[in-house]
Length: 366
Image 1: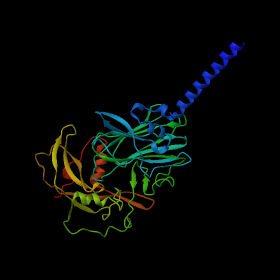
Image 2: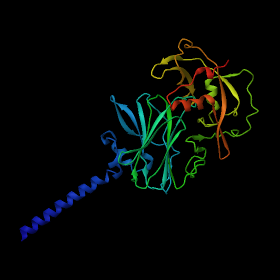
Image 3: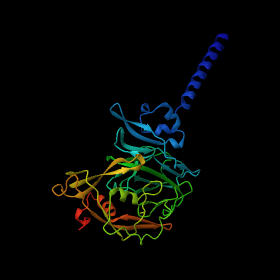
Image 4: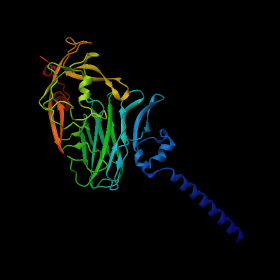
């Protein structure tokens, strides 16, 4: 009997030690990570533990030792989450396909309320980087794609959450092959959506979701809504691309959808020397390569490309400075805020959906 009790006690002690070890292991691995489509070998241990914090749901691809790996990246400080499951997530600025940065950024938000609508969009960091495009993809916790869209700047994907779908860790991807700088946004609004106004206090008050699939960003300039129709530049004045870029920036140097001095219907002339010109056979379009200054980085040179239909290399060469005439267009009014664009920008947004490019003759100064 004593021998039997000794064996029983030893067995119980062994089982207890196993349970303690298993419990200890479980504590170091968040349950949400079970649905992750990432190789955790590439993720530092401290990042895995930090995944429990909603601010640590941003990831991007960077190249290390000749291959792309997924790394965690902190979100922009404007990001916030509401108690009802609503959220507004903003990535840091991502210079895609530049240096060791790869073609993809994604959020891993935890969806906790089925009565919600999900919106995704990206905003380029330069208003004149007109031809930049982004693929945005939304997937459920099981890796199934539920919505996707190819967009230009300020065009958004919207998705109404279905009752049969699973709560948990979803995936919102923002992918581009271009060497462009973007900031990515992910919004979950709970209940009914009034797209023309910000949904809740945690969201930026100058961001408006229009019913036409466009996102509009208002300027913080004090004179942004003054009567600009009386403003005229001196006759024949030609703006450089840097000056035109400044027309769409506010006091925080952020790109907006409002011009500083021009009102709808007004015309403006624009010209800068071409850094390069080449024919892109795959697009059947000619690339006009320009350099503008990135004031966020000490006036570092930033390359942008405008594409025009056909092969124009016999007409234009490096150093030429064709003069364009653009017309300001009104593109919407939300909460008393008037938003503006250029005919060139609006035409490009329409043509991009069918893989076409604008004819240069439409915009040349004659």
